[in-house]
Image 1: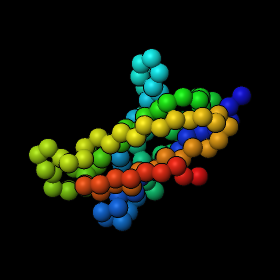
Image 2: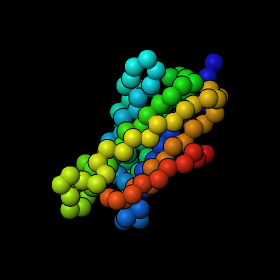
Image 3: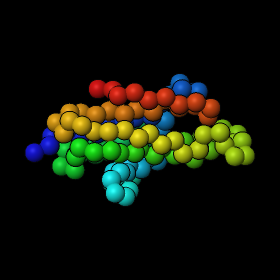
Length: 118
């Protein structure tokens, strides 16, 4: 039985605040792409609960797709045409079905970074 889970959060590094209201999609990548979840970040820049809870947690390849462009639009950040960063995909693997995987996004209109957190 798997008891690991996946969490994420988003920090708006341009403004120095959690990114509230950013939509995130999670996909499992195998023979095809399976949509697992859609979440929206709360006032702390986190999803309310794990984006992939223990009951659905499996070893495999995944992608988190962060809708950064729509978030920056909602914050009144003047858009370029097209925006430099719009949808930000982060692909990663889960190899330990008992672990907590935390994949955050630090984002501005012109850059992003991630890491495996705890």
